[in-house]
Amino acid sequence: MGLRSDLRGMTTISTFRLQELVRLRRLGAGARDVARMLEMSPNTERAYRRLFEASGVLHGDPRDLPDVEALRSIVDALRIAEASERHRRTVER
Image (cartoon, rainbow, N blue to C red; front, side, top):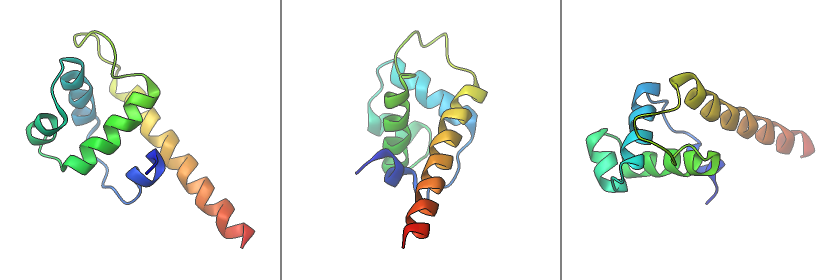
């Protein structure tokens, strides 16, 4: 399953929780622990983790996190690309 299908239909979570997801992963926390600590489903954690892995933001110093605007831009860019792809497929039918 690709990144786009992982994020389809998910509720938007706070950018501060996204930032905390990045921090916890940079500290080496496992997926289950991150999901539990942030009170999100494992599927939601996985979808955002894959997105951030592909964007390269999960690597680095846990004290030097990307700002919330950068994280939101990453998520928004994927959602826009996803909507554009759905529109393109609809037009082609």
